[in-house]
Image 1 (tube, helix red, strand yellow):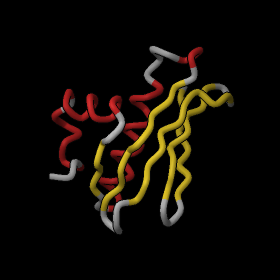
Image 2 (cartoon, helix red, strand yellow):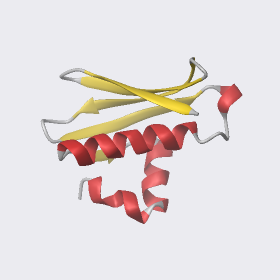
Image 3 (cartoon, helix red, strand yellow):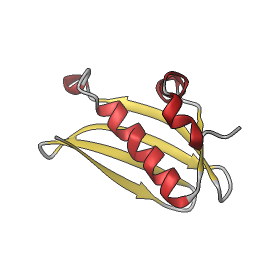
Image 4 (cartoon, one colour):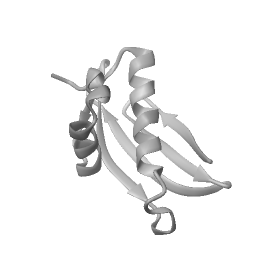
Length: 95
């Protein structure tokens, strides 16, 4: 099971994924004002490639945005591609 923890401050934040207590990946973001944040980097540890780690972190970011009424600007290639592929995530995209 993948556990995702969020770290957040006024300028930056991250979603860290853990599997069996070991860090499996990290997605970082930067705030762009009060209402938007930019996903700028996604990284998955090599041992966990193909296990859905990136997707779980992205879903955590989307759920955070929905819950708090925020929008996402996906700059990192993984996040950008994921939003383009998934119609159901596009409600949190900056237009």
